[in-house]
Length: 211
Image (tube, rainbow, N blue to C red; front, side, top):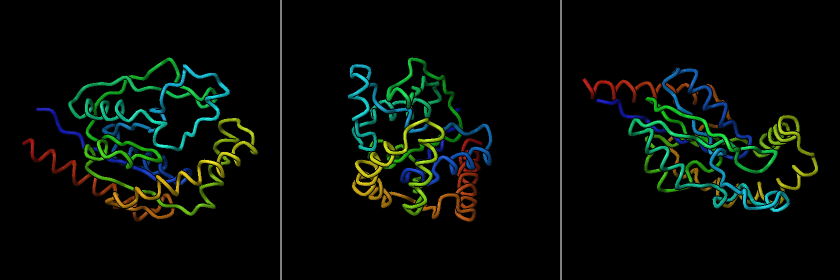
């Protein structure tokens, strides 16, 4: 009998510390964790020229291919491998290559709107929201986009004020009401430790049920 997967959703605003929390979970649990970044499920925009792709609101729920993500989570829960899409931020489009992802005991769906779509939430055993002050988040966003992704500072600021901030207020922040656990200030040690203990307990319970 295949061990059932424990599915965790980790949401929160840009730069909140979601990826850091997901990595802490993976390090604590080990190879039993499969991470699905929501960014990988941005819609394929190959049909649009670069200029139009640059104008897309990537913080709006419509930017993501929710059906594919839910299909992939369901497949992993059934013990099936998936071909996860990859995303090229410099091209504002999906990469032609995919990555084979094997099923595991714990599946983490991590991204700004991970708790937004009801069909996806229904697959989750635990919903987590990472809450961090806006001034900290914008500084982290600038560092990531300018240093890591090679974007111009002015463009990053324009995007933040034009779409990131209003989309956070309209769509991301309200998903906090779906959270079972709220982690304050990003990588809050006590809250993360409690989350990890909860995951270990759930995994032990699943293992006991199979005996």
